[in-house]
Image (cartoon, rainbow, N blue to C red):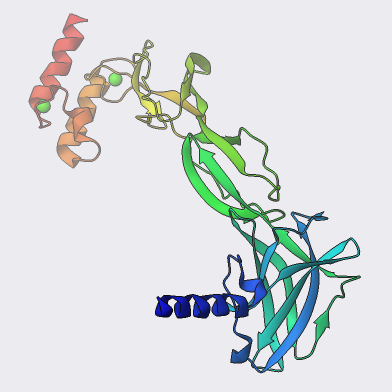
Length: 314
Ligand SMILES: [Ca+2]
Ligand SMILES: [Ca+2]
């Protein structure tokens, strides 16, 4: 029983000697004996740019890097209140002191920094200096229903929307896109819409077929056109299998059509064509296919006979 009582005494002694500022602070406590130098701060805060008249609940701590160097406590006198903080260091000057705040739910960012100076003082109870505390907010960017970005930003941070390009599609934002983060969570949404392009088929300067089609859908050309005295040789440029990312026009190309017997392509079948075949047989100059009237792969008297036969039947 005696021992229990003794233990209680030690515990209560420990509690009463703990620094006041450590009580209830989210940030823990600093042992002043670990440090040679200190400075004093008298601060007030803004939260998201709004000056705070009631500092109760403000839980501010000073850091150098990730090392806790001081914890603030709220003091009041004559109807005024301020945050009092001793900040410790083992360097008389040169360290940059940053601050962190906690609102009971979230850790908050503090934009203000102070250059450590041994024996230094920032602010006074009557004129405390201002620590700009910023609440964390979530920026969510949703593209076509999928979350592309979800990150923590603070009021005033620049919002980077990223670039959104897809071949054959047009991108648009469907919600406002502020340049900087407001003091609230923000969701920005955008979507891609497929583009349509005009696909045109032209025959001798006349539009044979013209349709607006979605990008990358299959192109179905019209049936091959025909005209007397000509053979259709295709579309130029060659018809794409699918709609490219621009309008396209295909134009019919033709070659004059001739009977196979009309080897000199003058529109009549006569002895001039026979002479043409003989000439090829002797010199083998020109396109064999053109003089190979019966299309058997060789140019010989059989081709001449074919011309004569046709001349007799005309
Ligand atoms: Ca001829
Ligand atoms: Ca032949």
